[in-house]
Amino acid sequence: MRWHDKLARGELVIIDGGVGSELARRGVPMSNAAWSGTAVLAHASIVTAVHLDYVRAGADVIIVNTFGSARFMLEAAGVGDRFESVNRAAVQCARRARIASGNHDVAIAGSMSNLPPNFDVAGYPPPAREQRDYDELAALLAAADVDLIALEMVQEPKHGSRALAAAKATGLPVWLGISVDRNGRGDLVGFDRHRVPLGATLDALLRFAPDVVNIMHSPLQVIDDAIVAVRRVWNGPLGVYPEIPYSTAPVWQCAADGTPERLVAHARGWVAAGVSLVGGCCGTGPEHIRALSVAFASDTLVQ
Image (cartoon, rainbow, N blue to C red):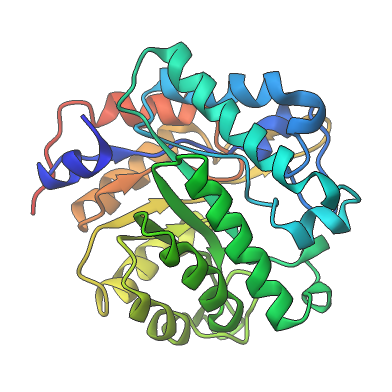
């Protein structure tokens, strides 16, 4: 059963877990400029294996490793001339995983971010060039036959609007993924943009009428309040796929308070609050998605 059918039937949709952090855990080097965007150049088999492990763990949706693959991101990583081959290869990794799993109902979501190279806000290209690069990536993902576009780690209106406009222009279903944290006063703000209130971001971006809003790559401790804030202005399908505590030394691994059991415990509360899609972002792995899939296997959501 496909993800939109599950939502229509009041069933929980399971999203995959972190891709970049899982690749890093398996020894794939990350790019300072483009995070995991260059991984397919030398490690396509590992990218495919990560997707396959998430499908086997129970994911209904796998998100393509194109988070850091807009042309301006790849140019900063020194491989801008390989934009098309990088992104097509990333989609093919997800497609090969779906075929290998035998589960053809699994949806493939093309990922788009609106983050700057090196996560440095001074690194954005001029606005017209930025928009052109988002348009280019969205069009390539659509031409590669992804099932939907997942806009990820949006934290503010200006750059988020450009990326969201590009995604909507494809005509595909679009998921808006917002990343939230608290500032020093305890207000809900952008994950890295502590001067941007969550409300201002939602006011600007919900006008684009996304198909799903996800609270993603956000700390576990802010999710409950973020759900309340989003629900004040959004009545459509709501998802959560948070980051969890993890360490990178000596190896990538989830911390003691980032276990699959703890994620499931949080997810039960989110589902009770009306969340209909759950998964994981940085720090989570197939074991977290398997735990979610098992925990909610026979549950039907209360509408």
